[in-house]
Image (cartoon, rainbow, N blue to C red):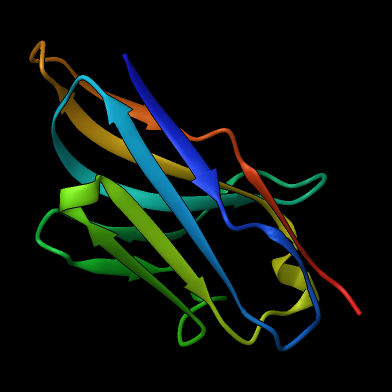
Length: 120
């Protein structure tokens, strides 16, 4: 089995920063793509940022220049550094990893979600 555990969410004032982390554990052979998604109340889940195994990065237009995604393969961890936060960034943030298990199976796995609230 594979588990993804997120941390780093919380309440922050507009203009502030937060760093989210997501670590995978279990029967992991290799991890291909990693990403962060978010879902605000009444809205669909959307891609915030993604990073491939070759470290190619992709960002939603709304966060480009403010958020940075990175990964540590040795720790099976993906990070999301969020700067200049705005109230519209308020959402539950989910990490996602596409990986191959030690049993040779490919799959997409999700973290449990972490709340980010940007408010004064």
